Length: 273
Figure (cartoon, rainbow, N blue to C red):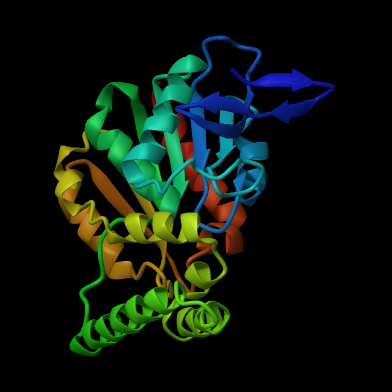
């Protein structure tokens, strides 16, 4: 379980991978619990302002997903299921269930899977800028993907050829920079494979199985997870509502932090977990 020494949080080995997390327990042992799940490329610090608000009346847990923040990388490429299994194990270990979850972007993938497959863990669910629905690929996008696969496969073979390995690695790095997203380019091989596994998963089939009351909070100028994704989630999740932040980007919950915190606190505070 989580160790604390001199106020410094140390990681725990959960499901074979060190996980850095914190649990700030409310003095009232009957207080509701909430878990904050950050997005890809961020860490738990992104929710620090919200955590400060919620701690007044709730037990608040947060974590750094493996490969982010203070947590180690997963021992092998993980998909959403492995991340969700680790979070579930942490919740059970710390006796935090039932738990509300507030999740952003990649964290929403994990939250949606937990809510669909383990409803007994859940209180309420807040998703902001949530990933999990695959974007339709254009014909040009399909051709671009095929070109990347052909070129990368050729360069991967050339890396094994004496005297050509260094050149092939240089060209492969340029190829990734040209064809890959910024998130993909900066990763090492293990995390690249993890990233590809994660973004390749379409969680749409899980949405109708989510019974937790769900609040979707979205920026209407979000280009990473466009508003149509929120509208699709609202339609598919049985008990879901949508709040739109005008002019908000993928990080609308940070840009309009005070408004976000007020809405979340009111939503979670209506009834017990």
